Length: 154
Image 1 (cartoon, helix red, strand yellow):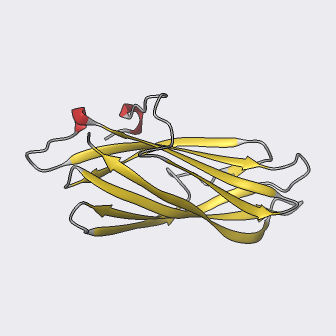
Image 2: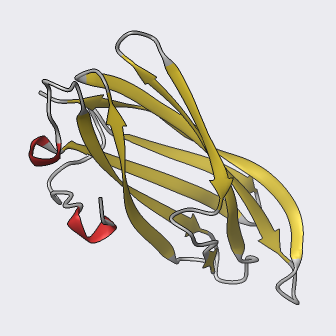
């Protein structure tokens, strides 16, 4: 599946199936906000195989005062659980092949997908993020939790 083929309706908001996480960096440097909007892709799914494909859009925001240090997403970890309780762990560098740097007030958005053998499941994870010093070199590393969200075929 090509990333350009993933369509996430703008009307899907955090709530029943999505999530929003706010992780403080520290009092002086703001916070990182993660927003997830999942969506079932019936046109890519085949319940007879069984294969159910879910897309999800992620927004990462560096909500901080303008004088705060930039942050960089360096890796990610996902825990995916299907309706049978089978778990899959996915880890890797960055997100969608990138390690975005976010200055205060900036956002990075991307879309990806997850195939499941069941018609529903959950995902949750962590982003490895570093603050950058004045020379844009890694300074302090921390983890940003991505709260559990639901993948539901409806």
